[in-house]
Length: 275
Ligand SMILES: Cc1cc2nc3c(=O)[nH]c(=O)nc-3n(C[C@H](O)[C@H](O)[C@H](O)COP(=O)(O)O)c2cc1C
Image 1 (cartoon, rainbow, N blue to C red):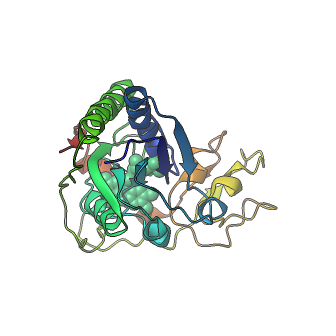
Image 2 (image 1 turned 90 degrees about the horizontal axis):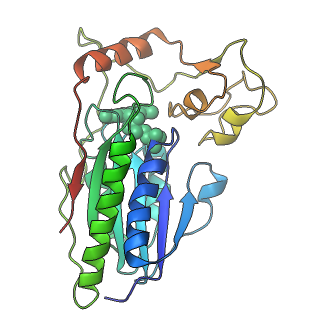
């Protein structure tokens, strides 16, 4: 394989867990390979316009959150537009302590179809977008140190493979992916959170950050209490609000969150996959 001359860290990370994890993995790779990192944030529609094509001398670290056991469906057209040319890639997902189901297999499978050689993978438990209890505070310092070490290990593997062949890695989950996870109330009643929208309270200082970071640009920048567009419930506006002025108030949403908090409170380990 060709020697690597650029690391690309690409992520969609509304509440910034994946951004931190990806940075640590890329740092580990960069220190081992002595190659610079180009950070590519896919947060807003404007960030996602440019067509991305990578060569065999690029190394990509791509990080996505797991939504309903898969990749966020509104981001699928973008993920499917990434093009590799025998480009080494590391597929990484973060998930909120329930399960990553087919999220990692979907990311790895799509990248493989699109010309990447997925030689590394990882699934990181990280604080759930909906909660401050599930995987609270993760990724923490220990998680980020483990992520950096994993990057270094992958770097050593790349150096050894430069003389020969780069192998793909197997990751858990179905490919093609199965159906999306469907939230249910404890009594089995289906819960639908697709139509909810985040509300603002009187603490709002009208800084407009929520409108700027919204991945679907659903929030009216002239009046941030107005959410005319499609909300993907990512919680960027809630968790990144500097004064904590935003929240979902939907009753079923909170039934779902409390149920998750009760059932998935145990500490989960990071899973790493390498050849
Ligand atoms: C709409 C939505 C659905 C989610 N579904 C799942 C899920 O199926 N399993 C899980 O463990 N976490 C789930 N999460 C939690 C996120 O995967 C988790 O918080 C992730 O670390 C967020 O990444 P980010 O901080 O990079 O945005 C979901 C979050 C959202 C917003």
